[in-house]
Image (tube, rainbow over all chains, first blue to last red; front, side, top):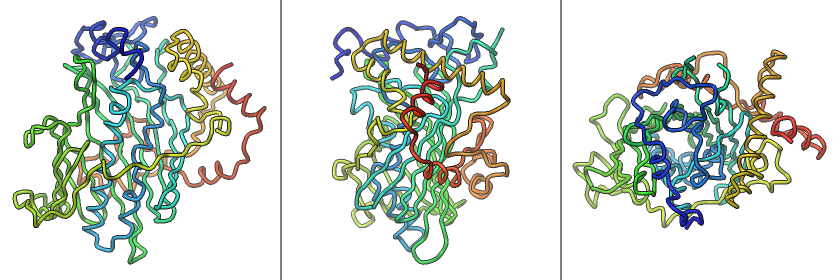
Length: 152
Length: 294
């Protein structure tokens, strides 16, 4: 259980109640001074200014690791001589990654939180060591949009 | 003044995962575009490419993987979670394509996070060779043939995540990381979040944002662009998308206009980065100060 949860609505729900106006058009004029909320939302989730109780201290660059939390399943297709069965093993691997990609954070923290918005050039490097040998991860932020566009 | 928000490129993360022993290599890039209608809906932009050396020959299979779209459920109940929707594909140079349909509160099972998948010779969707059904958060079953014949005799395998523990990723200790490595760069912000110290979070985030803004301005003034360390934008048309893209409705430009290009792992750059001696403490400190602030 998150410690902040106790002191009143530590959730996206209360965030949305603060900013209840529904978005009909994503293209709203932004003034130089506006910090972005749901009400002036340009479609870039990472650019939302979120209240601190839904902040995660994990950056989006780390999410790349969700592709390979079962390295033996990842490497398995290379052992299969039959092309159809090989393609099936790839499908199986892909399906096993979905839980990591999309549900592991809410299982770990109790709910989905807003990740840190990576800066250009941010790196996340690591490796897995198990019976599949060593598997190497390289993740890099290759594009960035500044959170508060104050210049055109 | 109106910003042209709908044509801008959202932030993009590129990745490469290599298992040298088997030669299996995954690479891709990912950007997200969100919209708000009843809840937060997120369209994932980008795709992944998996290459698999085949055991019997010198051939290498190439798989093109598209990403599902998603939305956030449970917002008003205070416990948001991600639900997948729509369709995604895994198509390949082997001549087989897999189609995955995500159905949320499944119309088949009535359970959340449901999906069905079928694999068929590319272009012959009715000739199902294998099918998979279940919940992507829990169990799923792989059967031979089309779903209408599913039974005990067609079952090939069941996957249960509870029976298959994940392998933990090892990351270098923070003091040994490059200054631009995520956990080192964000350490002070993370410490602020852990203590729920909002002033510290705001202060430390601003330092990074300001330093980044200055770095971009400096580059612009000097006519440079930021050099990506591991990834490049190839000049020529992408051969994987040209070959496999049409089968899954992915244009040859791979939505490049939305992510500022098709990012590919650059082995030469990676080799160079690998062979660089580690930064001295002084160099690391000055690089951090320049790009992440004081």
